[in-house]
Length: 158
Image 1 (cartoon, one colour):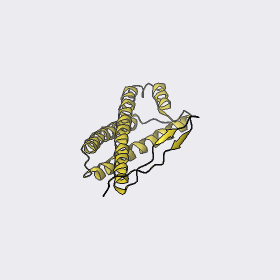
Image 2 (cartoon, one colour; image 1 turned 60 degrees about the vertical axis):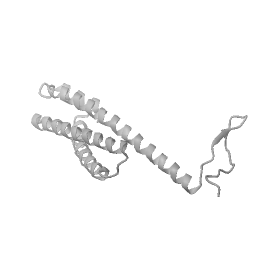
Image 3 (tube, rainbow, N blue to C red; image 1 turned 30 degrees about the horizontal axis):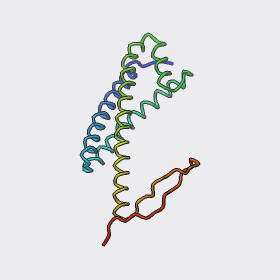
């Protein structure tokens, strides 16, 4: 198999650019979520999708290369591939930095996802209060089984 080192270098550089864009978008998304602003979120989501698509395309190319060589199609397989050849060995440090940056993005995305889930939970709770539908609290019996306490709650009296 003939290796095009410049194409590999360009792929990793392209991934660095996409991850840098993704990190910036995640920062912007978090700021909007913290301020509870909806304006701009749709645009950020679309831009995130574009960056992720580019990353996925390059991941598919890496998988094809690894499949051809009979290596595992994961980050460790790619690291092994880069170590095998003296021409690709200099790319290994860039690859390791890319993996670290990707993990940072994953953590940032998890935080944003938790913020979104918490906002949805709060909104649903407030809507249920307005509708007069307060969920029954869960209680435990003497046997340790969970039950729903079913007394009524009055939000307001006339």
